[in-house]
Length: 234
Image (tube, one colour):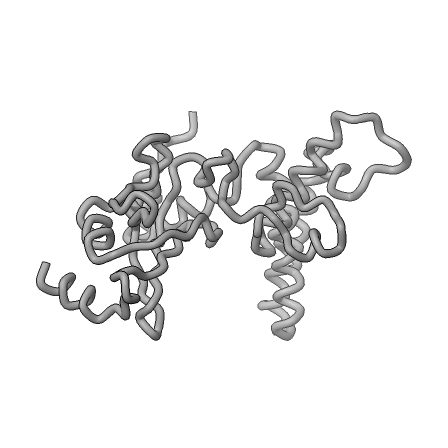
């Protein structure tokens, strides 16, 4: 606890004893929300491992999820280089925003300026923008089709085609190593593997976040131990 107090004393609190805290999804990297914290809020977060903030309007601590049960379970806490802001790195349980959105950041300023519909457009990384696009194509399959289907829709509708493309692209990726091709070629082939694999995940109803969570959980295990722990195929 002494070390926690020492770290808290090193933070550059404002004149009200507060600092900004940003909650970030440990698996997806998505920015979930922003709030204010004081020493007690961070100390509570450290001890209880749930994102806790300080309400300026109510002048009291509040834990995200205390009424909705949509907690943010904390995995780590980071201070920035100037020690005047904090990141709560955690795993959300359910949607973070009070509106029911996955995060509190779903309004695109660029779309608003360009008078495009910015509603419910989450601030996504490249990987999750791709996943979102594949999900949209999957949803569109139910609607009447005009013209030829896109490549993604063809893959979604044909398991044999999809699996053959994954095998083909994986082989091409391996050949970049075997034939000593340059890094850009390896990156391009990996992009193909990732795209086609994500289409398969969409077919199976598996989200990338599920995959990344499994990878994170394996960090503390050896590969041999992890394989032994797998449930046998039925």
